[in-house]
Image (cartoon, rainbow, N blue to C red; front, side, top):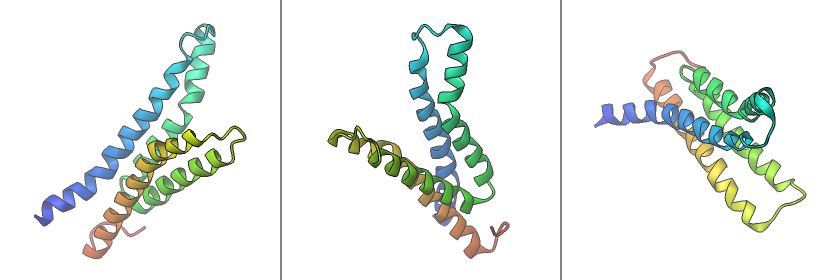
Length: 128
């Protein structure tokens, strides 16, 4: 049973991090059909996918340094909530967006932290 739990705690944050980056990339598809032309659409697509690229880079780094993933994903969720609350056009329904966007980042960060603690307690791997 312990081996299954260790496997889950190891793989879950990595899979969630990659899946969440793909989920964010879906929002960039709105650049098609804006009449920007090939190069304008390509540039807009690249710019809209910067958050996804950053999250994939964080997952790559956190693959071995789980504490980096824990801090980065929780910070990303907090940053999204702060930026949403600072919006001048804040409407009540926008608060549900924070659950959809920040919720998975908090869960991923917590799972990375759990994996870091598991490795630290067992003495395996490098300590970050």
